[in-house]
Length: 378
Image 1 (cartoon, rainbow, N blue to C red):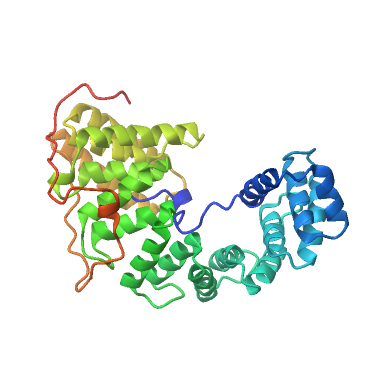
Image 2: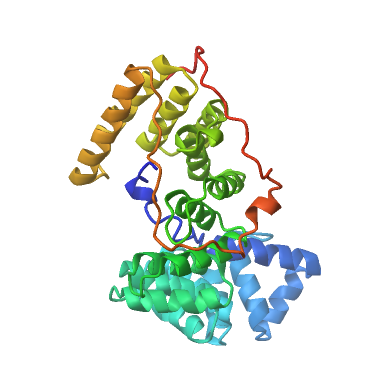
């Protein structure tokens, strides 16, 4: 599978906590459903009701339903946090971590996360785990990070389940146990957490912690791609283009998915990535469009050379891979990943019912033969 860009590494491990905004959306919906007028909310907040203070503070910080006033909103969130309102404490930590409505202060962020985490709030436990994992506001400590991830994961918090699964898979801060990691990814994936879906699919693809199972890998990649997340879509495109099982290869669909991933990335305002361009080349080659595949592969090599976020060691390795694929396309041959051997003694997870849920046929699907065409324009 292609290597993720530096800016995306471990993105499946850490959810993009939009800090205040994630809670804001929930908070705003709650207020609308209750029909609580802003005036009443203000009165309850002034009477000392922590929930009202939290709600009012969030609304003022974001300007939802009232004039935006970050300073006033911060004071209300602070008042709620001082009353041990756990969500307010977590949000206050997020404000300090992100530098929203207050000067950025990772140490204070850690302090507020700790208050809520010690009281058992899973989101705060996960946020605190991230700080320990990165060494932000606290001394870097993989073991403490794993401990906080596990606490949140045990409460069913999907992002933390994926994060703890990562720790266990790599043996970083926790005892290495790939079958156990796969189970944590499954728990998270079954709650709809996309990074866990793609990681679980990868484990099935390479046979890490579970037996090699390309059909289950395909099913999880397909489910993840429905999230309209560009990297999940790119993963599916790569799978369809390069899977060792020819029955699961599909050049037409691989090209469509690769184009979709590139389009989503462009619409998000992000720069074009060499990994996605490499995937497009592989998809075109699988579809027999070798002239186009060559152009895209050369473009991937150029983008790789310009990527300042890639280490010299990574660049050297990727350049060899990219040039190797280019040589294949020039010989009118598609690229196929090597079939994984998998870990010895790996056992299937009966809890994984993805094939039944996706209503996939038990027989092997008909393979698609490469065909020639005009392709796309680089």
